[in-house]
Image (cartoon, rainbow, N blue to C red; front, side, top):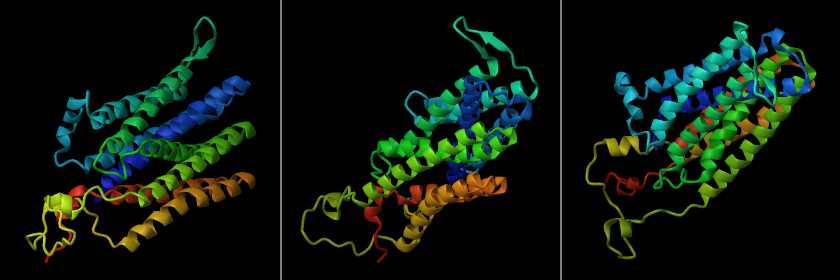
Length: 324
């Protein structure tokens, strides 16, 4: 497929935003369970605003994918059967919940709710709802691709796991950077540990997907495509010399070496290099190194998402192999 850069930025940025807000809520849950008070540091408000910023940037990027942005709201019309519609509905829900969560902390409007069996801050309840909505959004975004059966490279549960784990990985790496504002070693260690865990898991599932896709057989051949089963069929021409929508939008047009280079650069930058820089930054207490690690990983994830889209082979391309 021809990767749309708007989709590359949309999915990567909102994934990082969902991961960051998950990091913040996880930290607040851990702090409450451990009796740690970091509210005065402004960490919850600052980090959740950053998460909202990433979500907004992703939403802005999506506008460039629409010929008529003003009609974008119509995407919700097929919400019963379309994963895209579900994504369009869930994204503003997540953004709204993140905004409320941030406002409760920034404006110091948080209060304790008595649930009968426990007393819990209202912001934490909103936070748990936000994380639940973010997980649903991860699934909806991943299923947009995993549900398309004629793209063998996408049609696997690994696609959904990759979206979830990469989003959590980048979000928790960003969470490590923000956790330094608390000045609490336990909070920092929690985020570092989870960032390493999710980045390692994301590396495993992504490499697993690459190996799986490399061993896929063709969905169709020239013989069954035209219904003629002679053993020696060659396409000499696709019937016309000019380009068309089919030849431009369903193929990336890049040399196989370019794809291979992007694939392994993306994997190397987004996972092992990120783990190495994060470990150095956390061990030596270098906040700037952690910030660099997040930016560096995002570059790798942008490349990974571009490759993910380009790697999919549309079955119609069998008819457009040669110009003649």
